[in-house]
Length: 164
Image 1: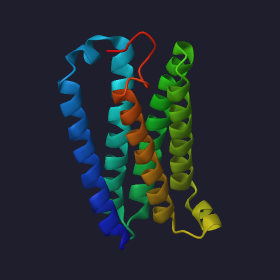
Image 2: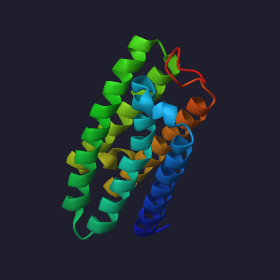
Image 3: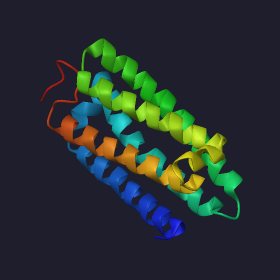
Image 4: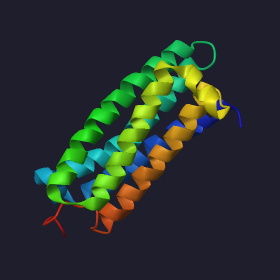
């Protein structure tokens, strides 16, 4: 598949997931009133929004202006990593091992996305073009987001004492 086509489909899919998540959240207005749940809801939101925005940067920058997508990926990955580490610290205090594992893995993926954006030649270690390596990392990030949604909806990813 052409990388440009991949990122077009990827960004559209992630924005659709953002919309679907907000539909779920609308049905649970109590989640937004409780700070502990609002943090986790926001973490799920970012797990789809940030990759969608990165997909847009990949489309706009493409092969002709790689500095644009690289800067966009690096900046958004730093934002994602910082947000995720904040949620990870909260998950540790709360005692939610699932949240700790998922958020720890997401923070690592964001870090790798930033590294590839800043030092693109590192992608050659695995035999990929930088924009392809970023695509693989984004796919993994969205998979973690799906896992977080599933466990959250099942009640297992929510903070202790926040069950329905």
